[in-house]
Structure formats: C-alpha cells, structure tokens
Length: 107
DNA sequence: GCCAATACGCGTCAGGGGCA
DNA sequence: TGCCCCTGACGCGTATTGGC
Image (tube, rainbow, N blue to C red; front, side, top):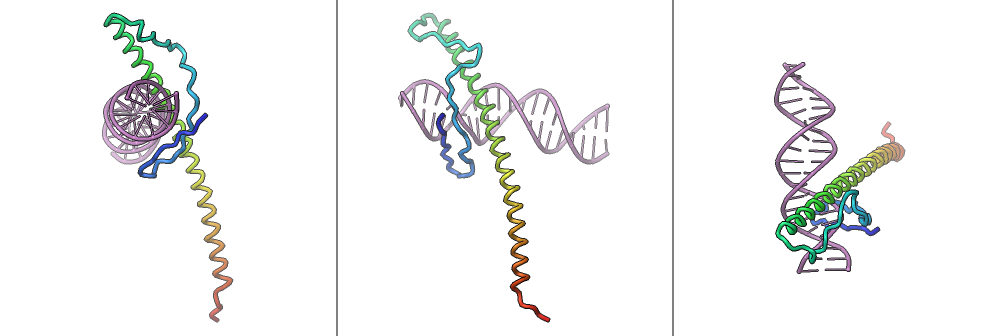
C-alpha cells in the first residue's frame, strides 16, 4: 500500500487519502484482447466500447471509495473540533480562576 | 396531503499527479 | 509519454423537512 499525496495548491484540501492496491478486477470484467489480434473496424469499435465500459466501472468504484474516505475524514475533523472545544472551554475556565486568584482585592 | 427547499448519493467528465 | 488513479465539479434522481 502506498500513500497518495495530494498537492493542494490552495491548501484547503488535506492529504487524507491512502491508496490501496488495485490488483483484482471487479467480477464480470473480461480483459480485452491484445491490439494485435484486432482487425475489422467492428472489432476495433467493440474494443473501444469495452475499454470505455471498463474505465467507467473503475471510475464509478473509485468515486464511491473517494466519497467514503472524504466522509470519514470529515467525521474525524468534527470529532477533533469537539475535543478542542472542550479543551478550549476548560482553558477559559482555568484562566478565569487564575484571574480571580491574582487580581487584587478592592475593598 | 401538497409543494418548494434542502440534503444526500450516484454516475460521469475533466484535469492533475505518480509511475513505469 | 502514455496509462492509471484520485478527486473536484456538475447534473440528475430520490429522500427528508418545513410551511401551508
């Protein structure tokens, strides 16, 4: 498994994707004949159609996986926000306490 | 119950990046 | 340099929601 690093020019899209090995073809996919074995225009057209369908099918699955990862990433960010909010609240409370302790009494 | 607005998921295309 | 993968953007269909 290798890591796919997105080069984000804007910096707002993170590098949350991990590239999984894609060795197996989906069920029902038949590998195309080698180009050398094609002759007639009809065979060429069939080959082109097959390639297009294969590409579409792979892209369909890739898009699903991409959306799944993105959802996961957003969930992760949301839970991090929740943790940081709690942490922030605690720090504010602590600051108020310290202020009370350190401020001179005026009476 | 009906309808418009909004949310959500899907399929596809286009374009960029990595790799042999 | 061509091939492949990933992902943003777009359009479309369906589900959900809020107002009437």
